Length: 301
Image (cartoon, rainbow, N blue to C red; front, side, top):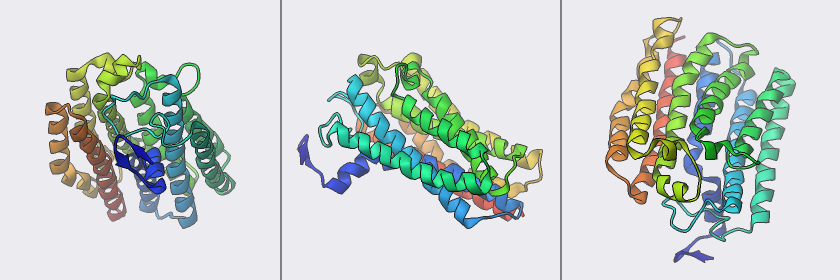
């Protein structure tokens, strides 16, 4: 099947639909929350795997739902700078995208059911809220992604909720350190969406999609992106300065030489290909940052 002169296999089409560049945002908080539990000497491997599966498939389901909803609203036009959306691009019939959305959320529900059984009913509320937030980003009568609230919800659900929830899955209670560590994770997750919306600022404006980037304008959106990135580094030492963790939690600062060039790209460039690269690099930056943070937590034992 060909779109815009590019031939794609079925597997490639579904990988495009899943938007695998965004999946580090689902993996990273689970690593951090689980490693904080490991700092306390608690680790349940099956719960960790179930949490990873649940997080990844909620993310995939959200991406598919957004692909479907944006196409129905006419937000994905031919002049958008990002990768081709499979529904609007005619690569996959809308009905199949909707079925894949249900299947993805179904897998997440199965993983969540196991976690509810072994860790507590509270996780049922967390999972339901996460799926609902994913669907309502671009779906429903008043999608919050169209009202400039996307980064706020990403910060909450891919930072606070995901890290604290992954920690709770292991230990069945919450400590302030889980919330403190969730803040930099959530800031970097929000940065992924921020660069995505910065890339699409012109096409989103024409489509009536009032993202935060559209509301702020190009220059202030650049400031927002840089602030999200660098605040993550500034806040990370809190659990060392005020809590029981050791200086090992500063390991993520080793990724600063990766972060600075990404900020410069967003500050200086507007072309879609370069910003697509910056989007992928921001996702990998978050994963590297959180992997080192997780290592620092385990080394702090």
